[in-house]
Amino acid sequence: MTRSTSSLALAALVTLAGAASADTPDIREIVRKWNAAPATGGQFTQLGIPTIGPDGRVAFSGTSNGFLGPTGMWATHPDNPQSIGIVAMENAPVPGGNGKLFSGFYWLHDRAIVGDDGVLGFANEVYGGGLPSYRLGAFKSDNGVLESVLLPGDAIPGIAGPTVDQVYDNVAMNRHGRVAVRATLKGAGVNASNDSVVAFEWIGGINTVQREGSPAPGMPGTTFGTSWGVPQITNASAVSFDSQLFGATNSNWSVWTGYPGLMTNVANATHISPFALPYTNGATVMSSYDDGMVFSKGVESGQSWFEAYWRWDGSVVSPVAWVGQLGPLGTYTDFDEYSLVTNDAGDTLLRTVFEGPGVNADNDTAIIVVNTDGDQEVIAREGDTPWGLWNDVEFSDLDFSFGEAITDGGRVYFEAGMRGPGINADNDRGIWAREADGTMHLIIREGGYIKLGDGLGRWVEDFRFYSGRGTQSGTATGVNELGQIALRVTCTDGTMAIVVATLPTPGHCPGDVNGDGAVDFEDLNIVLAEWDSIGPVGTGGDADFDGDTDFDDLNIILANWGHICS
Image 1 (spheres, helix red, strand yellow):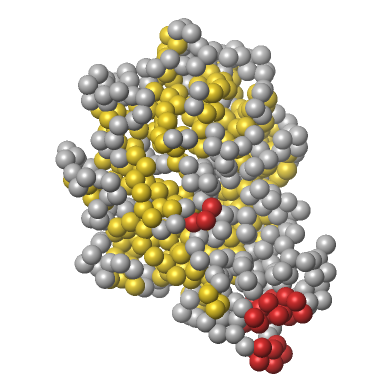
Image 2 (cartoon, rainbow, N blue to C red):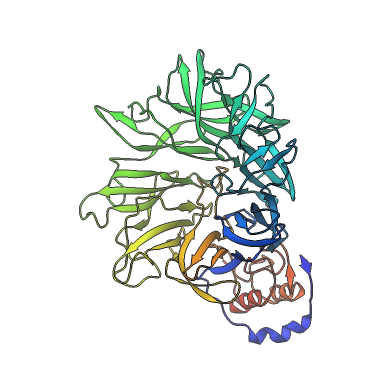
């Protein structure tokens, strides 16, 4: 940590400290509209939706009125969470781009994925350098050094002749900084039957694990067709993707995972499901983790079909949840497949519709978690009173995917609507967090009060966060295991800000900054010795995970004085 002052005389101030609530998230402002936009010579005029990494680093895109760069991507410094710096800027040279320049950062593709030690991965359009039009490239910033992972015009090892036309949509990146992409090709011999690849960073550089028109591993007479969507990459660096198959095995979809030279076909349309019924055709939603994946795929039953979710544990496929299954609230009749997310254990979060005794249109939707043993837990149900709201207010329909995430510790974040007396279009949405033990917290809601970095209170008009596809899927997310959720908040007075809401996770011992299981003089001495210092989130005397050591941390020590952690 970088210490600017330190004095044991601060011990005399301990009697001035007050207590903080463990049930209310601490809101820390990262940046606000009209703050200075670093490296542009101007101010922020618009802010994108932020993402956050395992160590609390926050990244976001934005626009500015500066003369040097109208749009760009910024992030907090790994060693100073209270300071932001430029990552990449519109019209700036692309590293190794031979005259190519960054195009605008407009939040469609450039959701930065934040990994360990602050490494960032993202996609953005580039132009110039001989390109006929704007094309997407893949990039990474590691220890403050921006590098190009895959650019339009690059050759891909193992594919002679053709070059990259552009990266498709967005990148995936695991927490170690390995990037996976789907890209299209151009050049001699390239046509609509062989112009897409799935590639990622592996030992020795970029490797291809799938090319349209190339042989599918372990399937004689079968070639890959088009790969759908953005691949995923786990922390163990296994790449997962969905692809058509043609030839001896003809399938409109197939799910794969693995490494170069060691790919596994998890399932395809010619397989028979564990229900002894054939799978349906169509696109697949999946969520990968180190030990397997969960994917959605319906099965055919007579003249009809029903929706189902399946878990691959590294060797076999087994059912997770399906239409017609009896759950804790009734029989499932529908799911929102885009709500699918998993954590490192494979616990699966879903939004569902159900029917049964006592179920009607006012209470027939819910959010559930299915663990790897098949146990199903209700997180929230339509018709229940949301925590933090008054009586007669209810959760409204929960079957639509607003945003939801599950952490490795089992905390579930979910966005939901509300209805009831006093609820209208200006205050009918919120975000809640539910702990594994059932404890519920209100994070933020429309119409709620928030205090920003200027010390002024405001009323929340809107909020946004990225939920991602799972903690080990390599997708952008707004939550981490430190109990933090990164949000873009818009207030009724027009103020827009990026904030981090921190709610310590169960098992965390507030005030125990040295981790010895007790809050005592040793923790107090650390706070005093580190007073007014700034460093990575949760280091030194930073008890409240905001990156500095100050009265807020002192308050936490005193409020929990003498506590022995279980």
